[in-house]
Amino acid sequence: MSDSNQEKKSPFDDYSFAVMYERRNDQFGYPGKILDHVIKYLKQYNVTSITDIGAGTGAFSIPLAIVGYTVYAVEPSFGMQSILYEKIKNLYVKVTIYPQPLETIKSLKADACIAMHSIYGIKPLEKALVAMMHIAPLVIIAVRTEKTYTVSDVIRSYFKKERSKHHLQHIIAYLNEHSISHEIHYIHQVHKVQIHDIYQEALFHCYAMGFDESHADTIMTILKKHLYKNGSYWFENVHDDAIVIIHT
Image 1 (tube, rainbow, N blue to C red):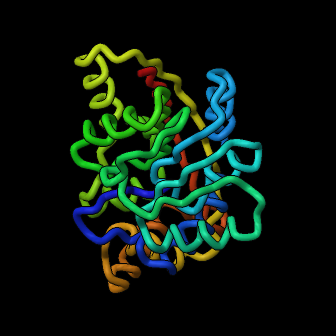
Image 2: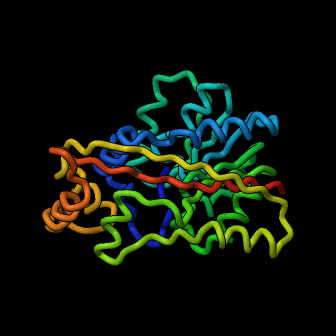
């Protein structure tokens, strides 16, 4: 799962950040229930091949390949690619990595195309939708809703760098405008996580927001204020995701 913004250098190009991101995803239980729901939809529509847009380090690509799907993993960020290559090299799975942006892919075809929290950086959003519908007749997209509230939201609010949570509305408006058949399902998850290394957590947010390490102390102060409970650091991440299933 990575943003595919090609207008500026992504933190996901940095291998050390990608490693940090991977470990943090494991700690926070990602992808959780979303993977089970995606597999349910794929089985429902008799899918055998999948294009995973913004595949990241393989949170969806690898488990989907393990259960038998042929997977085309589109991941333009160098750091994420590197980890994904490392993870699949000793696995006997059908995963082909496309190390390029979605908009540059012209001839790839599959039964389904998934984008799990990976369309946020593609602008305009409509361009990504068109590209994915060109790849497959079934498109499954996961986006956060306005009810989502995470550690990142706490930090970003302090620096007034809040992430947009209106992607669902934009997607629905586009699909309705073009009379494209779709359905929407919601997945609500709460992950209570203990932060064992508050400094590493602060560094993660520095890199994720494009700050240098000089901001780490400020972010640590924010984290301590919001996370400290009963002698340790805890936070309940609320993930309220919309799963949009598009039939073309």
